Length: 153
Image (cartoon, rainbow, N blue to C red; front, side, top):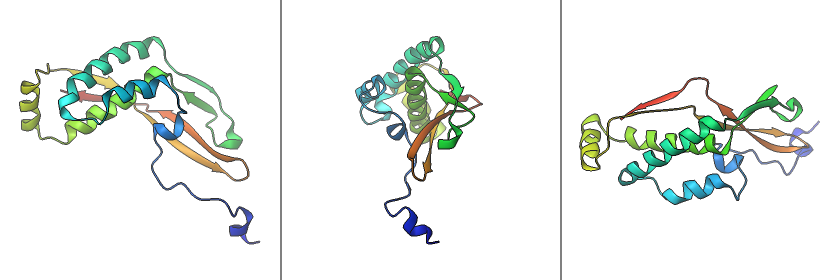
């Protein structure tokens, strides 16, 4: 049996799985994230304000586990995050990436310059994965971290 000719149109996905793969447009999530544009340290206050606002909303509107279709790569109990949880996770990842690119001393200076109060932010990171099911297609799934990400500012 020639496995390469069984599915001649198949091309493996080699890029990281992101929210762009998982969530279809249009979506409120993209509108909110689009307000930010390219994340930069000068936008940290705006990111924190949005994060804190949506974190409250996410606590009121949590995602849910539903029985997953294992035949197409879902977990037995697949997690489906709310839009608010997706926003919080994406903002949290942006904030983490921004602050990790500076030393503690640089961050201290930045916090003074932009008048950022000391604070701790917490969120459950939502990651994405795909499964290629031959003969059916490519399916994307979200996974909620079991441990909170904690960022000290």
